[in-house]
Image (cartoon, rainbow, N blue to C red; front, side, top):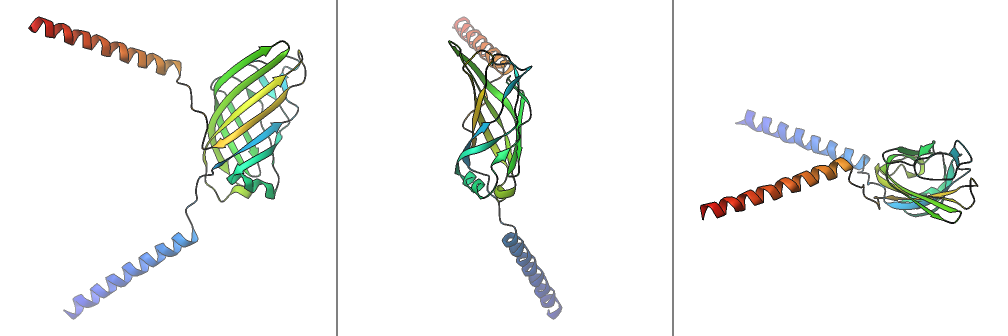
Length: 208
């Protein structure tokens, strides 16, 4: 009996030490929350590639980076340091990659919606991007999360200077548009369902 009691005490002690270790680990490594907030930004020296074209959907654009101009929520932490970022060349077309890199985080996503408006010589290209933002630097207290970018490119003269800005939100404020294949499958499914219902009704009339 004494031997059993000693073993039980040892087991209880081991379990206690285990839970104590887990508790210390939990205290040392708190659970990080996904970043939640918005920011607006401007892009500098945006040009079509090749240069001198009128802006439109389907074209490729270069830039020399930009900076954050306004923030809300968790992104307010950016004002403790630099707000600049770099953005590789991008193409305004469905499924094309769009990304940016900064000391405070990086984003990688795909174009999910595009539009073009023309009024006289004023041209406007809008497009939306969905992807993942991974915080770092001043925002390293937060974990990666989904983000949307909504862009506006403007041009007031033929082949002239291009204004460019975007707003970012995490969680996203836009949703992806269903792909043509998805819509086709949905249509085929509805057609098959309708045919099955008609066949069922015909069988009911024959049985009657």
